[in-house]
Length: 304
Image (cartoon, rainbow, N blue to C red):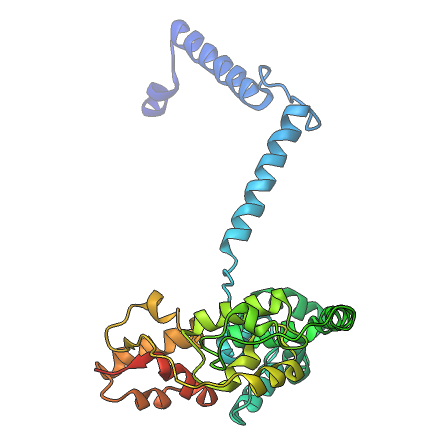
């Protein structure tokens, strides 16, 4: 009993100390739970500063989302793969229709033909068609159809002028590669604009090697082109500047009037695979190579 008494018996000063300690602990607990210095401040989120700040944050979020979206670069829709089609938002059936069409060795040459083959919606066509990149000769042919009304009007005007003041004109040469703008203007239906356009395209080709190349001149109707070819011939084929397909640079190869970006990339990939083309005819081994343009493409290429 003395043992317990020794542990629980305190003198007056000790009891006062214990009492003060208890009071201090109680006060501390009240202070912690009530926190008299804290105030629930209500922040006004409608202040002009906060509104401007929130708008800036939202614009940065939208910019980040836009930057994360895959970029779309110009491409030839004839060479769309499963992965590319999925990126563009095409369904599997739409991609399969295009691939089946391409297996028949045919090409779509306009956004209307692309929609007809794939059966994509108007909204998706409007979204991706601005990125379509067709070869120059395809673009020229498409624009020719669009300009038929304008050409018809010009033709009527030229016909009226010829009837009102017609004088027989002579030509300086019958060689289409040497003919001048004045020579071409002797053909009914060829005015200053078309004569300059023919010469400009002839310069791009370094001269006409095939008479059919005249039909590639933008806006020139087949009937008018036939009249030109009835007067002017290819008396002597031009001497074209050829480049070595094994050493040519990418930008230089793109100058070929019949090679677009996608085909240029395929040629370079094939060149990397085989190390060196032994014969220019090896281009036909490239997957999806446009065989119908082979004779014109190789006019400007050689393999050495």
